[in-house]
Image (tube, rainbow, N blue to C red; front, side):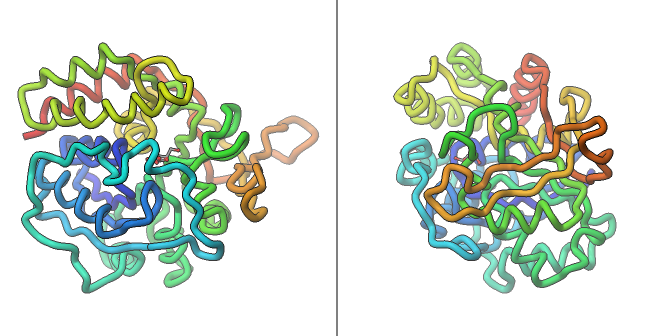
Length: 320
Ligand code: BDR
């Protein structure tokens, strides 16, 4: 199995991603680094991560405290609690108790750097939150893109509308400076933005089918997502929910069901409240107007939604 490190702000869809990682034999979830994002309350986010890990059979996976605020700009609540609830899990705590506490010997960024320097094979870094932990790790170790090239990100959007502004997606807008540093660093980035995550719509009948999985995880996911689907409905969407954070892992687990495009890209850092803050600027011109892209950044632009649905349910059914 490939070792992975998750940087996450759990979070309803982050929690599903943690369960997916634990239920996937191709991956070995080796560490979880908490980042502010859906909430600014790191203690709550840490508790959520530890409890979801306990639920999914990952009670021994270490959880590190990461970034509590953006790198260079003040934190603005961009609506996380509206979608995830004040506790991050829609008022439905995981039905498992953490068996240990946060590992405070290293920060999230230090844990990433140490792993990238010493583990072989190097871990795949998967970011389901603002990119602050990764940017801090990059500041500690500028060779990070050589040591740990593979980085999978949920964030941004190209053709689809933004979700926290007309143009920007929450994870990148929440810390645009961090996102810019990570996009510019030379990692082999694979990005699942709103182009594919909004398209990966799980309707209510699909979510109801998780309720009858023969384990504790399925019914809990169903119950927790009731808050999330209500939030989307209140914002004018049809019943159900998009699949954001698990999509970053799904690109890694099932590259066959995503169409990727390679473009040179950076991230706009115009200060809040500019609608361009966190916007992905990708050179999609092609042809004679722009040089051929030698970028190491790939964007998921299309996905086989039915394949995702079958795969996710099958994986969640493996949870303890
Ligand atoms: C992202 O924002 C968060 O609310 C979700 O957990 C996801 O990481 C989607 O824009």
